[in-house]
Image 1 (spheres, helix red, strand yellow):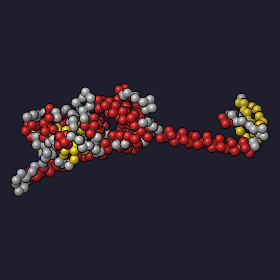
Image 2 (cartoon, rainbow, N blue to C red; image 1 turned 45 degrees about the horizontal axis):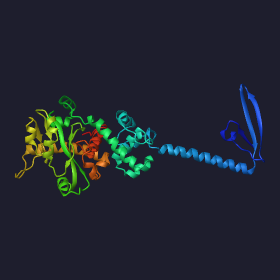
Image 3 (cartoon, rainbow, N blue to C red; image 1 turned 60 degrees about the horizontal axis):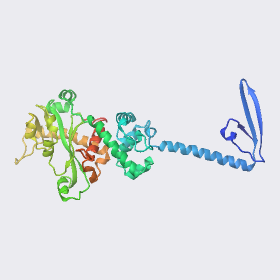
Image 4 (cartoon, rainbow, N blue to C red; image 1 turned 90 degrees about the vertical axis):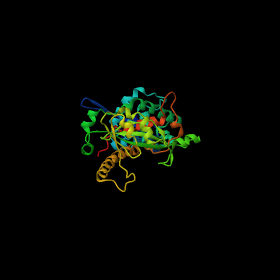
Length: 368
């Protein structure tokens, strides 16, 4: 004989066989009315009830596991390690801040994906460079939806996060300049230059192959000029240029010189032979000295080269941070990504690089 509360959802809908019977007890405790049902079950009913209870518990477990697996806000809630791993951003609050900025401009191509999931899908592809089919399985959508969502969201992110790559004013630069730069060069350093090269799929055209072949990387690449502040934030990113193009040519033609002010000091590597171009803006370039036919550098040149080399490691760390944080930049880009977007003068790869740099600026900077 088993005692059950009548309020139990299972007992309310129990169907008794002809062998089973029930006895109902009604009584009052204070102002509360209670009803109990005492049921005598046959063996068959007991087995059925046990199986139903097992299935109900299995259903609850599966729902709980499905909720944990669903790629939405709950998947990242209260877990900064997971947020950083999947998105590259430090906290869920930062992700939600990005969503608040771009969400109103996102077009939902599929009712299956919420605006948050569209952003999350895009950040995951940038961060981990997951194959499209893998992402499709994770979000329970087809490959076509993943591709369109990624492209549409990158377009929106590029349009609304580009202001995060901002060239600071001279007063702001001087007020926040790390003491290592002040000790070495005073408060004149405006920017540190380097190039980011991304491997691309080999073009079928021999002419395109020649323009994109990088002797430094021994591969076909696209090259982006990156400007870094002394604080470690990215303040300039150029459009992509074929890997064969020299650093000097990119510097002269990408628009960065227009941002210089008289008296500015630019730190650069040996490949940036741009003293004359920068000099037209009454600014100066510092690059590591070479022996240039001399047996050795004099003591002053050695010290200058040492200072520049040490501080330029700063730039390498920033670019390394961008690459390590967003694996899509370390992979070979499909050739269609380096073709101009429709009715625009930028490529889809340009947009991806810009978005990755803007998102990097939303994380704590590189500290000297």
